[in-house]
Each structure stands twice: as C-alpha cells, then as structure tokens.
Length: 76
Image 1 (cartoon, rainbow, N blue to C red):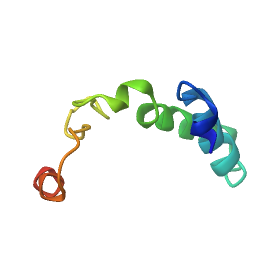
Image 2 (cartoon, rainbow, N blue to C red):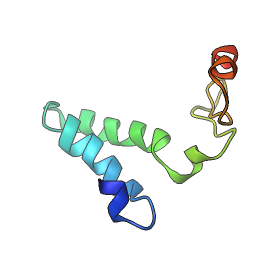
Image 3 (cartoon, one colour):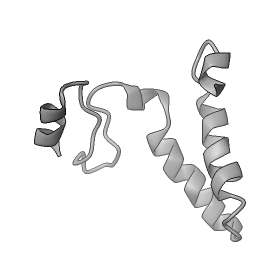
C-alpha cells in the first residue's frame, strides 16, 4: 500500500520502517539499530533495481535480470 501511494519509491521511508520501526523496537542497543540502517541501505535503494548491482564489494552477490525459475536456479 505504501508503494501505491507514491509516484516514486520512497526508499528513505522504507529503510526507516525496516530499521527503526520493525527492528528498532526489538533491538535495544542504539549502535545495533544504526548498523541495521546501514545494512538495509545496501539492499533497499534505487540502484538495487538495475541488473548487475553489487550488494558487496566482492561482487559475488548481485542483482540479475528477471528471468525464469531455471535461470534463477542456475545463478544460485
């Protein structure tokens, strides 16, 4: 529903919901909440939608083009 309300994807709001609302209520250490925010920013951002986006510096894990189940299994 959140995504349907906006013309552009509200990445900042989604990251806040994930880090501060969903996890933040369970994590008591403020440094851990901050770490969760940083990690989520790697995965929930505009660049993650493009093929070949690297989720880490190693490049081992990256987004791949949409395809069939078999293509996903081959990648995995």
